[in-house]
Length: 350
Image 1 (tube, rainbow, N blue to C red):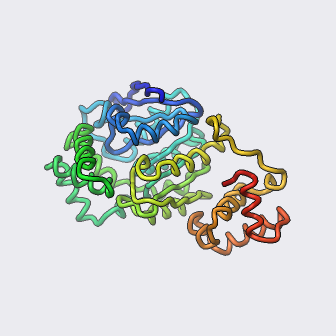
Image 2: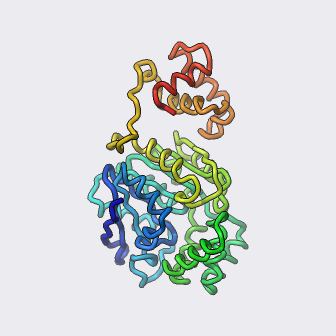
Image 3: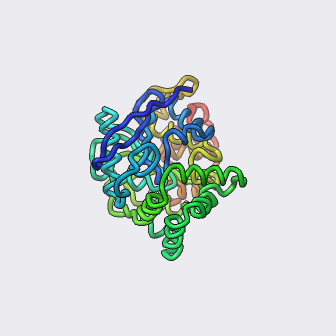
């Protein structure tokens, strides 16, 4: 696996560290509230996840000022617009006129506002494990309590956050992650970053996201409830919501392979190069007559989902899904749902 290349740019008068690995269309992964480019890269699961994306994309990551390899001096980022300015600086540093973006967790809020306020700079957007209004993440008293313990007792606070983010991990792994957080940011910066996470509100921005968007969420995410991800998808015109199995909030944990496939398939529609062994069959002429939404519904039909399941995942009404299925069968001249599923399988949709 190729090594990452670490570079630096400037935002808000501070040095921002960013890295690139892989080749293909540039995919910028939004900054985590607490990260460290070098320490993250030493984690085998994290490196596998980014490495898999790197077989198809040039994956760009960065550390927010106050964390990781970026400048630790100066006031912490305190507003969503501060984070948007940092993301813009990183995207400009890539040298690309437009990029693909994967915004995860609170980085999803940053990505959504960036797309809404910088038209033409992002071609496609994937949001994972995110939310529209930080006040819905937890009761206000719980938020203030966690911010307090992180700011005043970072050792204890980092362990509490490890329990939230790593629900299935053993003691040693949780302790390692708690230590990673303390190495990535000071108590002051961590508390400020956490407060910023709770203060983010992009409800008004989401309706102005006009690029193709996919929203992914794990069904039993312990840190950010799946219902909040579904709410995000419902606010973005034309967005697709995909519910994945699992409890892990971090995308590189649990069934990371399924997430890599979902991201790569969606972003791969932008016309970037395809990694060896992942080429998809050319659609037969009859399937080529289907709209993008009909192809997505057909793919889900082929996986065995009911109309109600598909409706929930795509944020549509069951009646609309039923109409799509009927249109698909009419266009393809198929007598049954099973025949449609078989056609999808032959075309390589599943």
